[in-house]
Amino acid sequence: MTAKSLFDKLWERHVVVEETADAPAVLFIDLHLVHEVTSPQAFSVLKDRGLKVRRPDLTIATLDHSTPTLPADEKGELPYATPEAKAQVETLIDNCKEHGITLFGLGDPRRGIVHVIGPELGLTQPGKTIVCGDSHTSTHGAFGALAFGIGTTEVGHVLATQCVLQRKPRSMRVRFEGAPAFGVTAKDLALATIAQIGADGGQGYAVEFAGPAIENLSMEGRMTLCNMSIEAGARFGMIAPDKTAFDWLKGRDYAPTDAAWDEAVSDWRALQTEEGAHFDKDVVVDAAAVKPMITFGVSPDAAAAVDGVQPSAADDDVAADYMQFEPDKPFSENAVHRVFIGSCTNSRLSDLRLAARVLRGRRVKDDVVALIVPGSEAVRREAEAEGLHKVFLDAGAEWREPGCSMCIAMNGDAGAPGDLVVSTSNRNFMGRQGKGVRTVLASPATAAASAIEGRIADPRPYLKDPAERFDVV
Image (tube, helix red, strand yellow):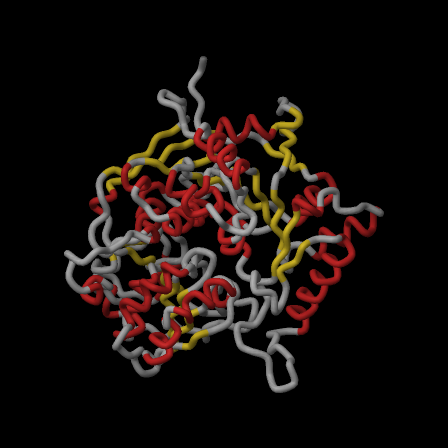
C-alpha cells in the first residue's frame, strides 16, 4: 500500500467528483466561514438566481474587517470609517437573518476575527475542509485541516452547493531542524522560511510543516506559521494533528464531547503523514539559526534578522525608494512612528502576553502611537482578566476593541503617509496600512520593543534572562 501524507488523506476524504484533464475536482466543504467584505456580492448572486444557502448549518459568519475598534459614542453609534463600511456590516446581518446563518455579530461575546474565533470556539477541527473568502484561511491548517481562501465567486458557489471546484496542487514538506533560540517566535520562523524560499516558493503547493521545532511549537504558534503560508504563495499550509492540538480543542464550544470526543481523536490520529509518503518538494529550515526577524521591503520575503543591516544591493529599486532605508545602515537606525499588535496572525492571548512581557513597567516612546487590538471578544476578556490591558495602558499604548484593524486599514485604523509602522500582521505591500505607509512585519515582542525605543528594536534585551522559560509562540 502506498504511504499517504496528511494532505493526501484530507483530499481523498472530500472528493465528490474526481479531477479530470478537462475539469477540476469537486470538493465537499465541512465549514464555510463568512465575513462582511467578500460575501455581499455572493449573496446577491444567490438572490438574483433564486437560490438558497444549501447548508446554513455548516456556515458561520462574523463581523471583523470593517468594524471599528473604537467604542460607540454617547448615542450608541459606532464610528465607522465610511458609509460603505457600515453598509457591509448591515448587509451581512440582513443576509444571515434571511438565510438562517449563525452570525457572531456586534455585541456577541463570541465575535472576533474569523481566523481567531474558528479555532477558539472549536469550529476548526482536524480532518475538516474549511474555506473563507479570505486568503489567510490557511491558519486553520494548524489543526490538520485542509483550509484555504477562496474568491467572492467561489463564496457564492459554496453557499449554493457546499462544494468548491479545485485542482489538486503539488505537495511540499517544510521541515524545521533544531531548536529555536531564545526570543525567536513562530512569526520569526515564518518570515525566515519565506525569505528562504521566496514569496512564490510555495505557489502551486500544499505545504505541510514538520520537524522537531514544529512538534514543540504551541498551538498559537502553529496558527501563526500556517497563517503566513499564503505569503510564500501557498494557499494550503498544515500541520499534522497531535496531542497539542487535541488538548487545545478539548472542551471548546463546538468540539465533540464524551464518546464522540474519543471517537474523533481516534480518527484524527489516523491523519498523520505516514512514513515514506511522497512529497513533490522537500525544504529544510535551520530553526536554530533563526533570529528575531523583520521585513525591510514591500514583500514578505524581503526579510532579515532585526539586528542586521539594510542590503546594499536592492533587488527592487521601487521597494527601496518606498521604504527609504539607507543601504548598509543598521535597521535599528530607522525611526518608528506607529506600532500595531493584532491581526489574525498575532492577536491571540499568548501574543498579548508576550507583548506585555516586553512593555511591563516601561513606556511607549513619545510620538509613537501603539495600537493593541485583541483578536476576539474572548481574547479581550481573558487579557483584561489577567490585567494585560493595564500593562498596555500604563505604557501609553491604546487598548482597542476586537477586529482586523490596521492589518488592512479598512476600518479607519491606518497610518499617515510616510509613517513607518512595525506591525504583527502578515502583509507589507505598498499602501496596505494606509496610503504611503511603510510596513515592517515583526513578532509581538519586536513590535513592543520598537514601541519603547521609537525605532526598530531587538526584543531580546527586554525578555530578561535567557534561562527564564520562553515558550515559542
